[in-house]
Length: 325
Ligand SMILES: O=C(O)[C@H](O)COP(=O)(O)O
Image (tube, rainbow, N blue to C red; front, side):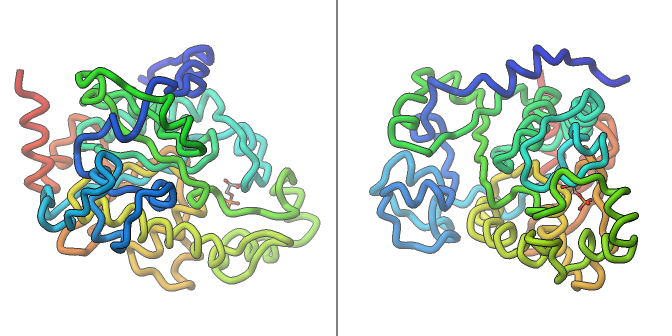
């Protein structure tokens, strides 16, 4: 049965910004510094894949290559398209318009959380849009680690200084969340806010299908999937893949088309094959990154699903450590 979360509770989850928090105080593990943090004067010369992630935040002079401190040679990657939004419900093109989840979307996010509750998560990436952020937060309420996802703000030095956590214990109970606009939904241009059915009646089903699903054809004044891939996949390669290579388990909460472009990259789909890739709202997908390869494991069925632990030895040992009293 779906867990019920009131709108008030959701509001407090998503609007409670971490005002007592700072990345450099927060993460002891050597996570990679995302590109945006690396622009903030950490004086890093190495490429993304060589940088010890949050070591750099912890200590700007620390420039030990990844390999020397690598945690493990495999990591899990969970992708979740956000739950149903208010405009999904109304069948409107949404794109980059920042629309929250419906009650059904909230339930979907919680259900997704149950499905992934046994899969380790060290780091969360979301788009900058509220529907993806709500989804990540709600999903993590179901996780067995019981850690609190905390959004890292890097818009100013002051934001970083002011969001300082002084308790070591609290830091250990937190998971960093990095919000990146590059993971946003594709910009749907002049279609944003239009009804999908009415648009198909006006321009023809074939034309609208091409705008929605083709790789190369952009909607009027919007982004094609190819253009969306240029930013989303580049972000993935520069900022997320190094985390996985280091052994950090990552959850990405994003959107239908930004995730389609990332899945196209992970599964090596052709521009023709990606046209038939559809993602349901709130359905998590699991990949294992090992030996520099992505292996798709499908959608975990639920927290009691034995198969989830059979995916890898590492997940099995995580399960044992979580169940240990
Ligand atoms: O932006 C939107 O309207 C949807 O989230 C994705 O829409 P699509 O399925 O039409 O690409």
